[in-house]
Image (cartoon, rainbow, N blue to C red; front, top):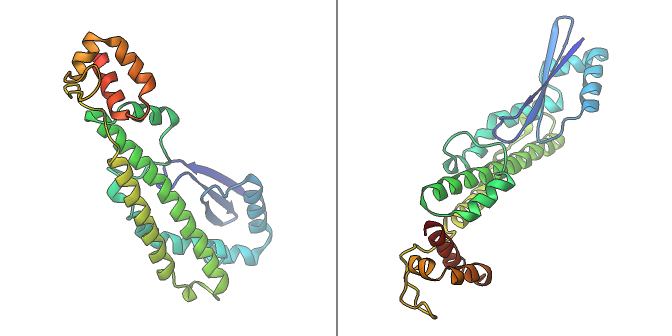
Length: 236
């Protein structure tokens, strides 16, 4: 008997693990999703296939519970993933953006690079949501199978409808939150208060860089002003 294990890191809902167990004239393929794989679990699965002919036949005929869940999930998962596709320019990513990307997005929120950064963040968050809702769907199918006599008695329609409805609501809220994030004030914006009233951010950066340094530290409640002043100072 031989066992081959492969990790698919590019799966649209995060990495999953696929194992192929082969014996004399037979091969059974099984996929572990959403972090459920372990070496011990795979080893026990392979051992049972090798020693239990009845179980092996059920797996080959796709009658084992894990195979039924997988087959139902694969038939319907695209309907769940379709909820997130409008937020992605290509295949969904495998997870949220890295911490350094988060920091870069905070530093730059408008202009070309800001739009690209916002899209990357949106796609990363959409991928994370897709993984969470697909896992909920997968586990829900397991629960339905546990209450039925077989896959023919399982109606995933209401479960899928509920998951898609909630997923759509969360993705719309995410898109709005990221889309509404305010960018910096333009460098030609005129200040309407204080000692620099009537001056543009660029004029202030050129004439009083010390004020800009102070504002970047103290004006926590004015993020657009702080970002605009920082940009003007970089352009001086």
